[in-house]
Image 1 (cartoon, rainbow, N blue to C red):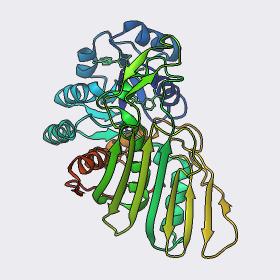
Image 2 (image 1 turned 45 degrees about the vertical axis):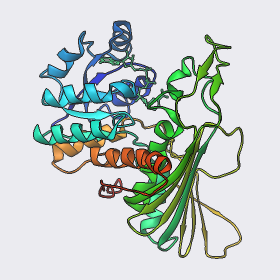
Image 3 (image 1 turned 135 degrees about the vertical axis):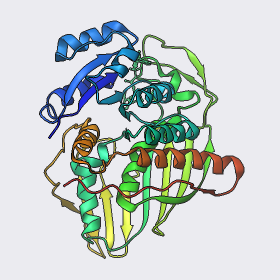
Image 4 (image 1 turned 90 degrees about the vertical axis):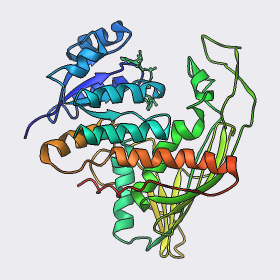
Length: 359
Ligand SMILES: NC(=O)c1ccc[n+]([C@@H]2O[C@H](COP(=O)([O-])OP(=O)(O)OC[C@H]3O[C@@H](n4cnc5c(N)ncnc54)[C@H](O)[C@@H]3O)[C@@H](O)[C@H]2O)c1
């Protein structure tokens, strides 16, 4: 089987785990054939640390005959521009989350990729880890009967106490839904299928934030976006979902994700990780039972999604962390904000097929 060659654009904070896994855990299944960053020292350091060729200019990496798939690890506001340039250069592309900032940009990307007969993939790939895949198997095998409802909660008090430059979390394109929603919504869609319509309320708890991390300790920054978003998800299957993402909450006792079925309940692990634990409580059972995880990928396996995409291309089968799925999740996130602004339901225009479980 041909090994796909990956060119990475953007060697920032998240690139470390990708480089580690794509040259280590997945190193026998694909090849990293180039890395680039506008800040040349970052790519030079990656070359030294992981023995991957440093290509000076982004366009040279995109045009390189040694690159089949572009892994786009730039900041969200650059996802569209870099991905469009990649597909126009005839390369497949896999974007970090969210797929693009605007749905119009993401739609254009999918259209352009189809015209150029190349594929689009998108993070997150945590739903392919042992934790959510175990939940998927339990649902598919009928442990909780027919799912009728689900709930997901991602609440904290923002990132200004630890992130060195947290401003972007409070600017357009940021906020808790666009930052963390992709993990929760991708997991929910993989467990329950696509979403047909959404509603919700999006509010801003605080007009400003004070950074308490270094080096900007004491700096007051304006908040441009909603920071507490409560959404209702009507799945095409008929199941009803509830999701809250918030940067306004100091403490809570709610679960990451739970799925409620006709025969019992399933408690899912943090969808921003690849592992467990997973619990089931059937019918009126007195206690939750912890279910052993399926064995593959309980550890931090970032890169699993692009590895599956690379093998999908070589094998001529669909890949799981697809552009179609990432687009659907992006439309859901915007749909909840739109519904809040208009005071109505937002009917999803996109759908996606439920990605196959990982064998
Ligand atoms: N940091 C995290 O913990 C984390 C976790 C999960 C996902 N992500 C996602 O990963 C992506 C990157 O996040 P990050 O935290 O690594 O950001 P970052 O700012 O640390 O790194 C982004 C890098 O991209 C480079 N870049 C931007 N445009 C470029 C271009 N045209 N050509 C070459 N290089 C370019 C920048 O110079 C920078 O080094 C985002 O989409 C984010 O949502 C980040």
